[in-house]
Amino acid sequence: MSKFIKLCFGFASLALLSACSSFVQVQDRSLYNELAIVDSNEIDGFKAVYIFNNDYDKSVWVSPEVHCVQMATEKTNVFSGPAGLKVTWDKIAGNCKWIGIGFGWNNWMSKDISDLKDNSAIQMKVKSVKGSFKNFPVAFALEDYSGVQAYYGFNYSLASGEFTDSTWTTVLIPLSKFPFEAKDFDLERVKQFIIQLEGDGNIYLDEIKFIKIENEKTIRS
Image 1 (cartoon, one colour):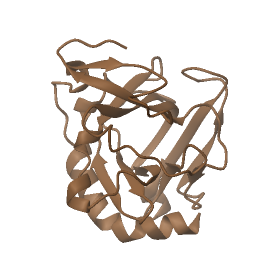
Image 2: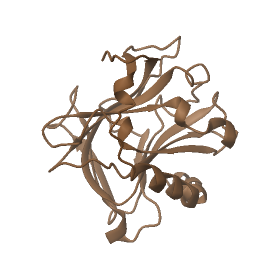
Image 3: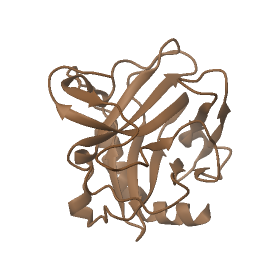
Image 4: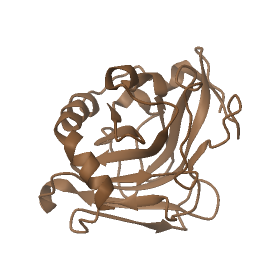
């Protein structure tokens, strides 16, 4: 765990600026609704499509600052399958420098996503524990096995709608949004997916996976 946090601290300031500039923007036009989604267990030969799918195992981690963030298996409010995750955090009240959760899916094996960067996205299902909100105070990152991290902050165009406690909202982050080239990111040696947490929140999280996308005006889920 400490290894992950050390890696993240080095990028915290830059990531925070990126995240803050992105997730505070509320846009009426949704990128999500302009993309056609092709849902499959394999994308052009890439089989490790599920980043999180029911199991809170050794490939899933959370920052150790329990006064700022807690994550637990959720078996009642799930999108699909027997279990999901419940994540509760308050970075400001807990006075934490950096908090987040991560997924080293596929048993921490190196993943080659070089063929996915132009035609795929990371999709996740999010539901509010109580009430509703539009701004999801997080930033997303992929990290390679050399320790390089590429971040992209949430903005409302990535969501299928408002986040509520009655329905699941889909968040879709095209891989093309991540600054891989600028960071000299090794797409052939991906280590993990990270969600950096800002502000506060209380959510259910489920079914994080890669999906294939097409640039069309209609959407198929």
